[in-house]
Structures are given as C-alpha cells and as structure tokens.
Length: 538
Image 1 (cartoon, rainbow, N blue to C red):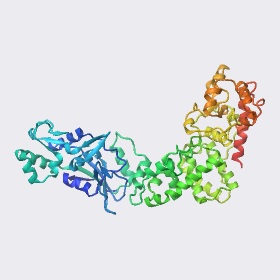
Image 2: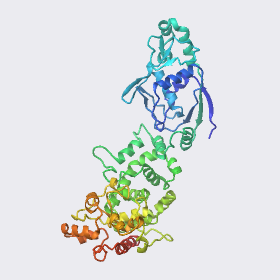
Image 3: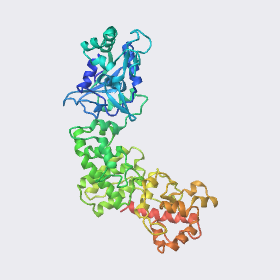
Image 4: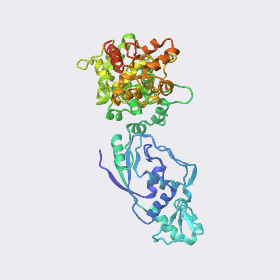
C-alpha cells in the first residue's frame, strides 16, 4: 500500500472533481445532517482563514454504492475504469460547501432548506471578529448570497454590488484561494479503507461486514443493490417469496453473506467474504437465494422448524444452503434426509457453532458433500450420546443451542393444543424470551414454588412444552397439572394422543395425576433422550 499523500486543493478544483464524478461520498457514510447554521459558520471560518480540518479521500477503481444526488443536484457517474476518490472523513463539511456552491435545496424533516439563502453581511468590516456569514440575508443590511458570490460573473457582480465591490472581491478571493487540506490514500483494499474510516470516526459505530459489502457490490448497470436485495429477501411487497412469509425473518444479513461465500469459495471467514469477486457475487445471488429458500423449506417441512427463532444456530443454514444449491432443485432422498437430520441434531447438541463457527462451517461442507454422494458423514472422535439423567435438571434458556435443539425436537412432533387437539402455532414474536407466549412450564412455576422448589428447579428444560398464548396465560395459569389436564380431558376426548405429541405418555406413569414433579421430569427425560439418540444414530 502506498503512503498517504498530502495535497492542497483550491475551492474550484475540489468541487469541480465532484461535478465531474471524480469525488464521491460512499453510502456507508452518515446521511447529510448539517444545518444551515453550521454551514454558515464553516464558510465564515474559511473567509477568516481559519483551518477547517482535513478531508481524507480514498482513491480506488473500486465501484461502491454512493450518494447519487445532494438535494436537487444530481451527481454524475464517473467514466468506466476511472479512479474515484471516496470521502472517508469530512463528508458533512464537503457536502455542505458543495450544497452552497450549487444552490442545493434539501428537504429535512418535511421542511425545505435552501442553501442559496446563506449570505454574507456586507455592512460588516472584512476584518470583523464577529461572524459575517448568516443563514438568511440579514434584514435591513446589504448582503450577497455565497452561491451568487461563487457563480456570478465579474460583470454581474460589479453591476449589482458596485457600492460594496471591494468587499465582494475580498470575499470571493478568500473563498477561491483557500487551500483545503486533503490526504489521499490510494488503492487500499476495501477492508483497510473501511478500517481507516472507522478509526477516524471514533464517535461513530464500526462498519459492519454487511455495510462494507453493500458498498462493494453495488452495480448501477446490473441494477444490483445488496441492501435492497436483502430487504426484498426478508420481505417483498406484492407477489413473491420472502423469508417473512416463511417465518424466517430473523435470519441476519451476515448469514446470507456466508451462504454466498460458501457457495463461491467453500470459505466463510470475514476476509474471504471481503475478497469475493463483485461480478461473481452478483451473478450468484439468485442461485444462493434459491438454495436458501430450499434449505428453509426443508427445515420447515422435514424437521418441523416452522419459525427461525427455534433454529439452534443461524449458521446451520450455511451448509444446508450449500447442499441444496448442489441438489439443483431435486428433492431430498430418504437416506439424505436421515443424514441431514443427524447432522442438524449433532451440530446443535454439541454446541458446535458457539466458537470458531466460520472454521467449523467450512469443515461441515465436506460432510454435506458426503451426504450428496450417499455416504454417512464422518463424526469419528466427535460422537455424542444423550443421557436422560443429564436432561432432568438442565435449565431452559432460549439462547442456548442445546435447549433450542430440544425445542426443535418438540416442534418436529407437531404438538397439539391440549383443549382442542388443534395444531400449536408458533410465532417468532412469541419465542424471544423464556417467558414468551409459546413456552409453558407444564408444572407451573408458581405451583412448584408453593411446594418448595427453587427457581432453577422449576425451570428445567424437561418442564417446557409448546402451547399457544391463550392456554398459556389465560387458562392454565398456576393450576397443578392434575387439575388442568382433567379439565382439558373433558373438552378433548383424544387428550392421551395430544399429550404424546409433547413427549408425554400415560399421565399415570408421568406423575401427572398425583402432581409428582420429579417422576414427571425423569420419565420425560427418558422419552426425550431416546428420541435424540435415535436422531443421532439413523
């Protein structure tokens, strides 16, 4: 990388570069937020010869998503192949000065802000210590708009401001001869340039990987805007498939980026994503999107994971998407399903992606490749067996992958409603916390507390069932199981089969009729452990 180059630019040279498209403000910068008062003060500082800070520009042939216009001023696109200088520091200053020069009109909070109004009070002396630049033409005082000062011909200035031409000439020369300090960093990689941006903008938040990739993959000719495509992936207006309608709206942008990187390079580390070829990224978008939807459809239809909140790890979608891209639309075979289900529970129950997720995901692509060939993936040295005694007092937490794996097992069983035997409907908004509406402690905690059990004992994973909001909060409440299950039995003649969909067998053996909590936990742990071990050993 070349060392930064210090340059001085005159007002006309700097802003002519914006006029011809050589200087751009990248889209990951903040929106233009300066008020006219700030801009007026900035111009006043220039007229007085005060330093106003340095503009840091990144010169590169990369094409980033950038500001297309400033108010009513449409900015030109540079010629293909030409280097562009992106503003990394000084966006607010450079944009406000340009807005004045061009007479921009911006709408801010529903109010039109006209930068042509910023004026110099000609009644004041040029060496005045007071501010001579105002937001509006000062009432009752002779003045000249800064926009006019910069754009009008000498002839027009002389004719219009003949009485104050000496001051007008002084201010015009002060603006046009002012040396703007700039530092140009040339041909830095985009991640380094963004690191520079982050460090010099210490008051702002660090750029996310997604924000960088939005800027890097933007392509006007191909009509590709990653930010827009991701929004449409989550939720698209009108007809079309999206993740919201599939119940997977909580999938983060970084997971989608990892799916693209896995497809193109088999690697998903940050540095690998940043190195992705722009054209290949754009060309692969629809393929990866189809693969992602196929993975979501599989999770919903084959594993019963109807909403994304119960997915143990978002990272699981990366190898699954990779797998379904290579299936090229063909359906999953019976053997493939068994192996995929085995992988899902193995990865979840071993807390596989709690650390080093990027490295482990890349390794798991080889397991997907084995499944595609009809072979069982190799788990040598990483086998797992679930013991019932380890489940009995395991605490429930919505953020724990192990617990989510068990919730996924419950969901796969398609649990029925206790009162009607209708299917329990899960909702992402009802699954955010352990106290959320779809989660219910079969032995209500308030009831157990009266029996002397402590909080950690009442919150056992084996005490969790999936119900709907109505039953959870309004009917069951703090009643003992023996009471509310008998009440449901009067409404639901098929209550025994309903309980079975929650991994609850004969109520007598489960300790339900005599409200025996520990018998209940042990029996349910046996049922759940057997089901998990069956999934792990297809």
